[in-house]
Length: 470
Image 1 (cartoon, rainbow, N blue to C red):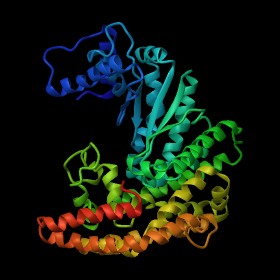
Image 2 (spheres, rainbow, N blue to C red):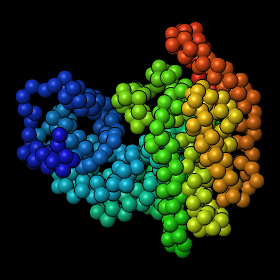
Image 3 (cartoon, one colour):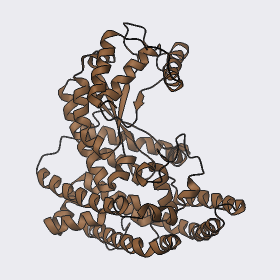
Image 4 (cartoon, rainbow, N blue to C red):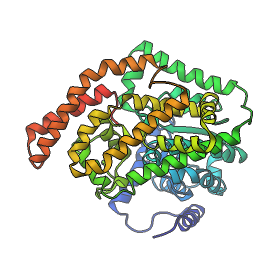
């Protein structure tokens, strides 16, 4: 197996020599080249703007991007000696990759072949940052802070090299996958991270909610456009208190990440508990999206994709990925810096205020008593894990209330509070019915098709009631 550095060196050599494929290609290689041949066909038939950027998922190094240039040439997208007419966008998804993103881009932009490619593309580079896997890796607070620092580093690094940066935000529908109030996140973006250019994904499940009616669609677009304009018009904030802000957030992120990873990845039998206490076995059969539920058929949470991970916890009404670890982080920061410092941070720093607002919205949707019914499906593992989860939930609620100076969740969000209160009487019976159906289906060794069909209906109903899948 080649290292990233060895692959990069070999790709540079192949690009320099304008090498062609050697020998017969495997079926997988032919399918890969066929993608670029299809892109070339679409450009010839429908024009140069028919195909947008080429996104490289799970980018770990410069070699992942350089390989696209070589494959594009081999796939007839760029005849010999001509530039590749395609914007290549690395997608940094995990916490580690986000931390390394600026360094990876510096190496990539220092490569003469890629720099020449960029010059033909107007010296503009788009970089995509992923919210789903980073959250699944380390929890919401750590992921949010890592994403912010990655954006700051990318703005500084790419700007210093004379390249215009556009950040592409890979957001999902839930807070756990970068959802939440998009206009607030734009307003709290680091200086220079928007710069008149903003791009994001909209998950299918939220398209109808945000754009289904003309009035709502106009309002959604108005909020995003006004936020982009506001960010570009405002003066750069003074650095007063910035060092302490970062020190507090570093501690919150680290403490919350430790609590999250200790539960999810370091606790023996937690993967088994997850499979028993959630309807993940039903969700696996739904065929959501174009990709398999897991990257590998190992049964490990590490290999499970983010959408089914979040979807399963949403069905149980626990929404664990959206808040677990926050309580530990806020408690550690309060002990170290004092309660007044946390309140000041929530009031004065838009990033932290937006994070707390998203967490509060998730906590407001949790029904811990119904979640306990699901947990009891795990048998003896219920007593091992649920008290720990319940304690962190109580800690998160109290931490958010203390930081915001409130006496109850959603105190200043009457519309959301009312919506939850109106929806719950319809969702609660479906949740209780699903718990019973899961028990009966598993007792039949997952062979009772009538019960399974009823389970599918319950999954759909709860998803509509919670207004989220993954």
